[in-house]
Image (tube, rainbow, N blue to C red; front, side, top):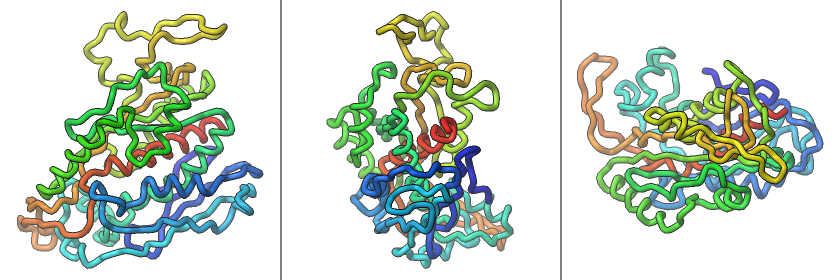
Length: 357
């Protein structure tokens, strides 16, 4: 299984959902960086399960234990290694999934690839549980980027049919991103929260789940970060974003919205503003030719509905090679989107820090 990413900053994530622990190793961090662990804990808690009915009731404290690479909350230059104990597992809920794969989940291709030896409990190494160490690493990255003048924040753009206020991609600023990244239900228009909660609750009560979109921004990036062809900002970020379970689409700026437009409608034209080159719009999401152009970076990800639902679904028995009906037990999010906001922020932070080192 490939669980390592990065060039100058290498991140390795290990563990399985119902194993003893999960964790990560971050290699390449500079020495002497002061890390605010309270800020790390806050990001971890934004992602943590068990808070309300929008999330799985599996309650994990998600307290990171530092093994190396940090002394008195200051990086030492050695690889930063961290583990989180899994303390609230119910592996028996997955006994019927050993040979009957869940539709929409990794069960079947993983069964074939690993000869049935992969840990199926809670999704094993394919589980969203592995985003906890990703958030730890990304929270550290966010703090280092902040010292470089870069701020990252994300919001829930859509859950089901309910949408947040449309953001102005060219006027996103540090103040807005600080507000979004400190919220547990990150919205530009906070009046949309109840409608989104209602959408999730309707799915939960019908034994189903619902998907959505998360939009992430970064401001303060230098012009010219990235490169062309195979070293683009888009490629680097898409690679780590698609490593987040349930992400099925990534777009920058208006993305697929370019398809039915003419260049005269969507080209980001220039002006001189306060003695600097600036764009009049930001349809390209702050990236041109694979490089940052000075406008706010904007990337959106589509999150699919949680595939593990209690509704009966059609599947197959891989031992008998007969059709089967599957009813999934266990604890699962009726909507991944709310808890995934800090995950997307942190994934973007890891990718950007690697590019900036």
